[in-house]
Image 1 (cartoon, rainbow, N blue to C red):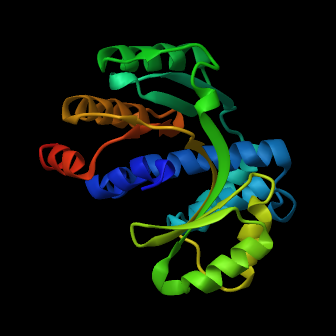
Image 2 (image 1 turned 90 degrees about the vertical axis):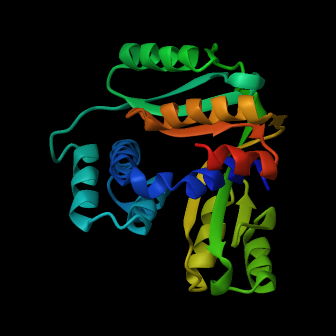
Length: 251
């Protein structure tokens, strides 16, 4: 399993996505608002906003919520001003953790994140301590039933994709950040529905964890992802499938 997919796959198995739909909506609304503030409210001229809107629709967010979030970003409606920031640190077993956040109070957020790391056996580090371990990539996932692997591979590579892998019943297309939008447009133009399409961070190496450290790390990741200001959490851990099955069974 690719390093990018490990944490997302575990969340799916735990049912975390459905259980935290409200938090997912909150994160998407923040992303739409910030994207609109930085790049304007027209998705045709703002790739980041276009991607955020697509993510909102794939999560069944009502159109009114999307429109309000855009208007708050452009200043047409009053709203909270969020700042983008990142946090880096280490979890149990020395696993590297990189967090992307949006907050209206950096002092409050960093204090709460530091406390979360400390309680779970990790530690919040300085900016740059682990960021170099995570490379920005475009990731597009497509359900296997919607396209043949050969057709999708040809389409994606012609548009500039780097790779295609099969992961948990999906095709996972990887691109550079620069080619992400062209590949996304090509897949969309071919009428192939995408489950997800986002610019994310992929770990360049992984740390293998045993059951005890793996369980502690997953607890920390749950806490961090549950924090209102955290948009995305990345970690470079690897846990053997049989060990992961034991952890999830007892979680």
